[in-house]
Length: 223
Image (cartoon, rainbow, N blue to C red; front, side, top):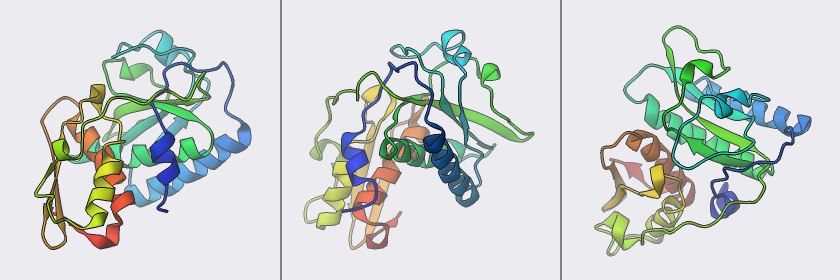
């Protein structure tokens, strides 16, 4: 059993929420976890509660969203690797939220960032937001590619590689396109490539986290 294995398997995107505030103890636990993440990553992720206007007035994105009033704002210092870092650490927040009984949805489409009620310091930027709250349902399983479709040189790869790929296939990606490839480079290296697109670096960070958690970070090195 690896960290967040249950959450990776059970978590699905949820776009319709109950009009119910996050329980105070749950919010406190979530904020404490975010503080740990920010300390380790150097990001400035924030949990914003009771802010329906960001979604009802300003959000235009793939699909639709209902009764969303809380979200994670993924913020960090402007840098070439910011989007990938936001994907990686933001997905940690998603999995922790799932463990706490909350539902989530990555939202990286077009919306008015200036209306997001988060503190953004000089030199920082908002990458995207993730809605969070109590869903009307737990979401539904989506169609997925096969291991063969997202791997290269997997023949003869150790079991941990296949385990990592399975978890990577459960990672949320933009419009569920799964435009990534994981390559096994003997004896213990892995290459992750993502097709270029508007949100490909965010997707890359999310996929990287899922793979690491399942494969075991001590078993391999990223190329």
